[in-house]
Each structure stands twice: as C-alpha cells, then as structure tokens.
Length: 426
Image 1 (spheres, rainbow, N blue to C red):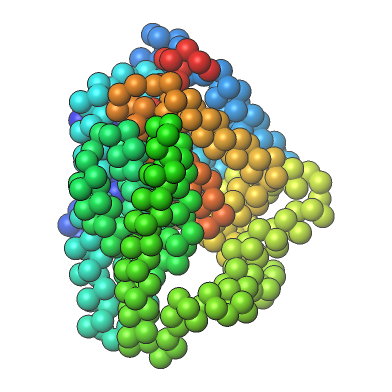
Image 2 (image 1 turned 90 degrees about the horizontal axis):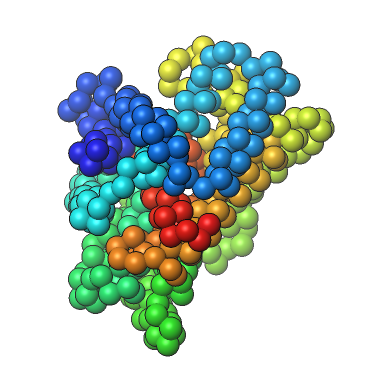
C-alpha cells in the first residue's frame, strides 16, 4: 500500500504538469482519480473487515450531514445528471485518502518516507519556478501567474510550500531535525514564493508558522522559539519584498511594488471587493465572490440553506454536458474561492459543515500533538498550523478542485484523525 500512496503523491503534484508538457499522454490527467479509485477499493475491503473501528463517529455524522445537504440541493433544484456527476467528482475523488490511514497502519519509517518524498517535490519547485520566471522575462511579459512549478497555479504552489514549512517547523520544535537543517530547508522551500507574486504568502505564512510554534514548542521554550520564528520570518520578508518588487516592476508597464499596493487602501479594497455584481464586466474580488452569491441566494430561503445544487454553478473539464446550469451566471464567482463555490452549490448549511470539518481536524491535530508520540505527534503539530492556513485559504483559492492540495489534505487529515482514535481520546 505504501507504493500506491507514494505514487498518488507524485501523481497529484506532478501529473498535470507533465501532461501539459506532453511528457505524458492527455489521458494521464485522470491518473490521480484512478489511483484514488484503487485506494477506495482497498479502503472498503479493509474497512469492512475492521468495521472502520479507527474512524471516529463524529466524522460519519458529519459526512452523513454533508450528503443530506447535497441530496436536498439536488432535489430542490432539479440538477441534471451531468452537473451532478461533475460536482460529485470534485467532492468525492479525494475522500478515499481520508479513510486510508484508518484502515491501513503505516509504520513510522513509511511515514518518514512519505514526508521525504513531499519535501523533495517541494524543493524541485525552486529551479522550475526560476526557469518559468526566466521564460517570462525572455518573452517580455511581467505577470507571475505562470510561475507555478509543477502545481499549475501560483497560489497553489505558494500554499503547498507554506504547508511544507509548517511541517518542517513541527518537526523542528519536536527536535526531529536540527536547527541548521531547518533554516536551510526553510529558505529553499519558501524561495519559490518570492518570485511568483503571491501576496497572500505574507498573510498565511506568519499565521501557519506562529500557530505551529505555539502549539508544538515544549513548555518553557515557547517564547524563545516564537521569537526565533519571528526573526526567521523577518529575514524571509527581507528577501521576499525586494525580490517581489524586482520581478513585479521589470518589463511591467504598470509597476506596483508591495509598498505601493499595501500603502494604497483603495488598491487593497479593489483587489478584495471590486463591485462585480451579476452582469458586471468587472473582475470579481474575493469579497464579491461571497457577497454577491449570498445576496442572490437570500432571496429564496431554500436556496440560501441548500444552494443551487452540487455542480450546478461550476464548469467541468469532462465536457459541456457536465457544466452546471448556472455556470454562465455565477461561474466568475465559483472560480475565485472554494467558499464561493460551496455557498452557491451547497448553501450556507454546506459552508458551515465544511468549516465544522476543518474544526474537527484542527481539534484532532491538537490532541495528537499533545498526547501522541513519535513522528505522528510531530506531524500533528505542523498539521494544526496547516489546517488553520487551509481554512483561511478556502476564502482565497478553489482548493476543492485542486488535486495536489485536496488529496494531500484529506490524506494527512485522515492520518491525524485515525491517530487520535488509536489514542482513545476522541
């Protein structure tokens, strides 16, 4: 099972990129889903034999509640078969990875191998991001959007790298790696985020890093370790700001430095909220993507609670017959963030249940970090920080449609949840 898990990690982080380069055939873009299906078969077979004893009842209740919300949304909106398939595909394809650690017990050596593989993939992003940025310069362009390493979206690459840093920090505060190695890897992993113009790194990195340190540092050392983390972030900021400004002003006919952006409240407000109502030609901001759907759905109490139906406001790469009926009207909002998509397709009830899921994972991470032992406990320290960052990112990125982040999040969340059940503290 370890080989299949490692192959899945490689597939979700590299397959789309290699397909885009024509190294792999187009059909390879479905490889992560095929692998998830194989894992699902193993989960069912093992789980039935074990009666899923390491899956906490709270998760069964939560998943049943989400299923009920989805069913009500489909029924109340008469969603067609095509959009249902398209929507359920995104919702269910990573789910087997959540149950996998509950029915297959991985040894500490195997877990270490998994983390080493993800670290290697993370380090690979640096030369690839540098090459992609150089290519942009040679073409006389200035945007950082195509700087994404193997992860296909610049924001996704940044969030992936931040997650790796949180994990490294958890290992460091639990003394699983040395200070020298930690600082070296910290810089190697985060350097790609300095050249892809992802401003949100300056928000998410401090949140994830400080949360990880506060949760994981031994008593009596929290202040010292937190101070060290702040100094390390300051050092990273001293690199991030000039590099960002350099890449964002070179060849750019409309150069904007970080100081120009954050020093101008109007620019920040426009970035977040652009007045992009239904029918407007303006680009939707993150706040628009929540405000506008919420205002439209509130006109019908049923739609406000259950949404427009799973897949009914989203596009699908399976073909036009799988695209939702409301995609033309609301698609500009669903592509902005997962929260906007959940709100439109599962209503307020669905969004609340997703946030409950994040809260449960965070709680399990705290418990395993506090009471667990070995590598799993150190990983749980970092996972608490990652879960917090991921919950915030639901309002910034469409994580549920991103294979790399959704598959990995479900797997390691399942690992932490199963570890807590085995501790007997749920």
